[in-house]
Amino acid sequence: MKGNSLPIYGDRMQVRDCVHVMDHCQAVNLVVKKAVNGSSYNIGGDNQTTNLHIVRMVCNIMDKIMPLKNGQSYRN
Image 1 (cartoon, rainbow, N blue to C red):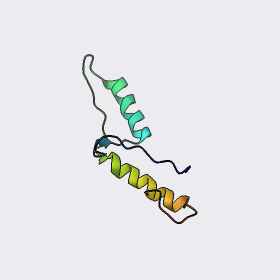
Image 2 (cartoon, one colour):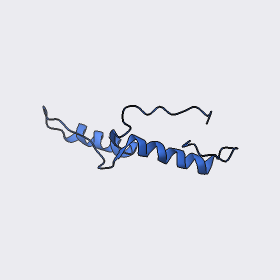
Image 3 (cartoon, rainbow, N blue to C red):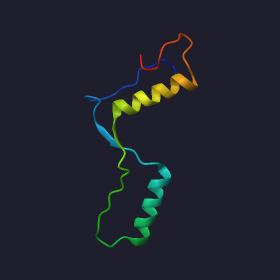
């Protein structure tokens, strides 16, 4: 919003697994209640995407809800 560049580190293709915060909280609660002592649990959302894709999605949303006055995209 201030016109600063977004830093995207590495080759920008690192993958993240995005989980909604409430889904994560429910999963943690389930593990706390039903976990077997000494076991390990991974919480994932099977919603994997790259850092670059997430940044592009955010820029597209910003273009719609808060367009830049010069008509450019946040992706520039």
